[in-house]
Image (cartoon, rainbow, N blue to C red; front, side):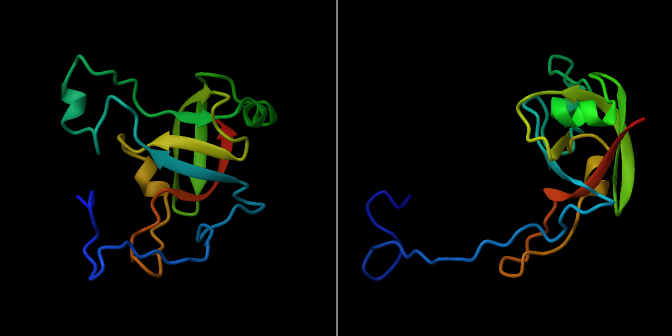
Length: 141
């Protein structure tokens, strides 16, 4: 698709500049880190189908955080860790990794809990919900 031309009268693409807008909910004193959610390789969407396949890895939900954040909070790898947002909280084992920013935690959305925490603010242009980022607090559980 669009290998030779775009669906415009002259076949050329149209680009428009847009202003960057940060997340609707920024980190603050009560919720000092960003929570982001996403996929893990072996699961799909809610996992309702993929978790039935025994050959796929299914370690359950986890909280991924940077060693410096884990150290400040007294969280150790594998220890129960509580994530709290303005909408609720969940507890899952910690995964302490260097592949995430120190001001951000990650929780996969395939298991119950993560999507209940995120913000449903809408993008003003596309009207897509902002399910991928919100402000959060983290603590050893």
